[in-house]
Image (tube, rainbow, N blue to C red):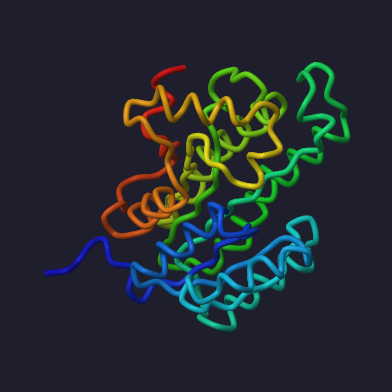
Length: 257
């Protein structure tokens, strides 16, 4: 009997690895354990010393530097995937950034440049990756990004990233509608508070994490492994009828807002 949850023979890109606490790390591990082969990218040369030791836990994938603001590096990432496999079955975009001076202030006070930068890296780069992925998915595939509940509700201290993630979730729906006829599914994953490096930039993040641990229905935080497991399901044939959705992987924390 066919295992619908298996990813044997599937290949794809996981972008945004920074360290062992990265959601990208949880996704790459889970995908590899389900049978997929991955090409993993990290965003800065400074991250190399943190990501290289993680290679064995991800099944010894090829690692590539890819700053998503550099079109040449983005092209090189997808060209490498084409050279390796001739196609891809999935792309995981786990990338977000906002200048701290804008992120820590009120939305009404954020700068034009800061907002534009956050939108470019956190949202439009997903669209750029989808454009490059489309011709490499002739038989369909799945695209994933990482959002947060602050896209839907005004969450204290999430500030400027709320509108940015709202744009990302909207883009997810539009891309799902546009790419669906080619069999390409598009999903936003919305983890709850996870103690990642990116999350540490949020003002009063620890209070939000403690709230998740004490008030979520499951009384715990989701882990990067939990997020990876959700991506495996959605990338597999078991999730082939799902697209355009925001999936909360947060131990039910969003129910308590």
